[in-house]
Length: 435
Image 1 (cartoon, one colour):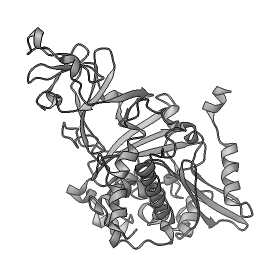
Image 2 (spheres, helix red, strand yellow; image 1 turned 90 degrees about the vertical axis):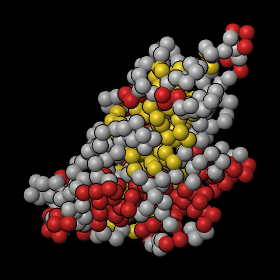
Image 3 (tube, one colour; image 1 turned 180 degrees about the vertical axis):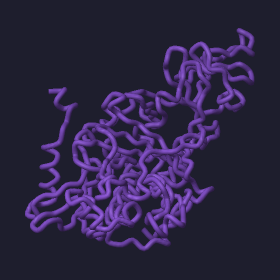
Image 4 (spheres, one colour; image 1 turned 45 degrees about the vertical axis):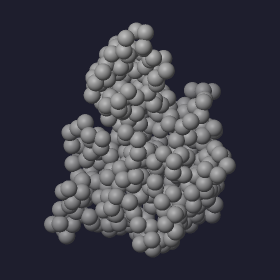
């Protein structure tokens, strides 16, 4: 990863870039359904470097289109959302949710040419509380990805959005770097602090795991492994799924968590968390009954604004050094930063808007990161050169039964066999319902 060209092609997502064009082949989770009200104010939406607006019309349909009116380029963010369309306040031209110009009131009837004008609009669909956008050029959009967590209806499906002020890849890579857990999140925890039956015990006993990893149909998979009790192995499995999805080990395979790291532009990312069966409880597993210091769950948000980057910003952010408490860092927690997500946010944002890959020195724990970068580059370049559809675009089912988690098995069991055993034993209500 020393070539600047490789880095640029990985990180840049605007129109015409290899990674940006590859990502446009996929459906992108863009907005919570609850963010858009019928005939409500349009929402500024930044996706893959494009300035868009999103609105819900009188009939409940969602429109996502370039914010510029095709007439004189005034922003449709200022528009009136009324009677099944967005009307530009400059001259009154009106567009439906598909971008068709349906009214041109400042033109005499014999000079009206609205049937020849169309706003740049993208295809949109909704599923279980999420608005998805397809920004590709295919005449027929591919099917929605069958990300397992997204198939559950709300309130079973828990959705969270959080903005991160950095490039999408450095944000995502925090999820496929398991050894940081023993430092960033549990660096203050000693083995004697942890209950004997807590799997966290093995992380703090041995903070330098070894790894297996492989390419998969949907992306890449790794497992970190450490010795547990005599004759046993502690496993932590996680996945990268094209183009920007991750699954992290947060407990048993019966809990489903999948995250999207959606590029807003090259230097801002929207984290979209989809989970089923609640939040992990392992961070409460100390003998004294308390949580790991600094391991608060959940999010504290600043009020949303109408800026391009005004949605879902945390109170912990670069402007206040992520509220780091130096006294707590000395006496209580490893980082002095409260909250798991705040810690992740701080380290990835502290790298700067875009990581300088030439400055890095990747180590053994970064094998998944290096492998995933190569996989992304190969897929983006194959699409750019030959038009080869990237993984998962036309095979949404490959995402359906991918899970992550941590567990202990007999040390004689091979790593892929250990994963398969967990998958066979996991609760799969959607599959059971289909049968």
